[in-house]
Length: 307
Ligand code: TXA
Ligand code: MG
Image 1 (tube, helix red, strand yellow):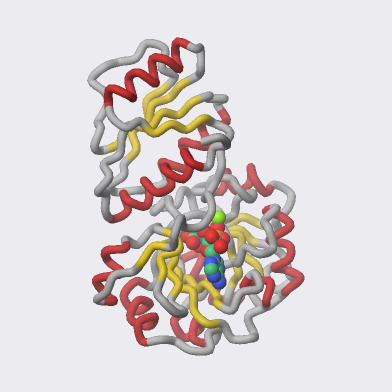
Image 2 (tube, rainbow, N blue to C red):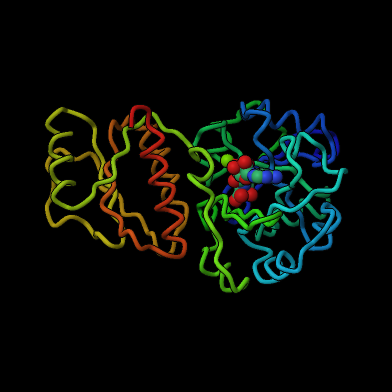
């Protein structure tokens, strides 16, 4: 199907991807159309080996090789200087190409058979990334040739993305922690100012409480205003000792082991016509995967219009 210029959604360890032959412009165009994604937003090229990655870049710096050897296959994507054979449309017109080797047997098998795949997350543009095949079908029904269903993804947050072209920059925090990367490189990496745009936007009202007193106040106010309200606790705020009469639901988000919980619960709340998701306070000094989930929660809060 890939060779027939079709789109195939496939599982990775992070979220589902929407794959097309990375060298076929007509197929890659379909990705942008299916997602409703702006053309200047580049796509990661998914490979099944370091050798394959080498054939896409004009130069593979020693640091890039070290990171690949340490973390591939795994949720770390690297932006490197592209060879001309990587189509412009894949790079969003930029000089660099983003490379990723997913740690999932189905994804690796597919790439081994079909060659490098240009693939964004398999959601409509602006929606939370899909962590189940059902999420993919909901967003892209009728627009894709197939979804390879391998159940719920394990990591549940997108890959970490760093630009290694000039000054190293963290473009997106994700499945591999910044600390682990810095340890391998033996140096600090700066975060890009403000980072990339919102990862997703939901119509729900998303509120992150600063402390427990504020959380209680917000929940009681929302319930008082007859809003359908859910509370999302985390490992650091295990259940509020208080029970709130009128709360629609209480979720427990595992920030430490990660997993598909965050994106699943947002989609579930949307389907259930929840009005407000109140997130329990997050510590400010989180590390590891917890920092990546906190990043997505902060983005969901600030992506809301008027906030
Ligand atoms: O975990 C993941 O990375 C998932 C799975 C499917 O692999 N993919 C994913 O792709 O999240 P996407 O397209 O939803 O997000 C990739 C991000 C986008 O923000 C894009 O702008 C950025 O990576 N990106 C891709 N190629 C780039 C490049 N050449 N230069 C700068 N940023 C790039
Ligand atoms: Mg995406």
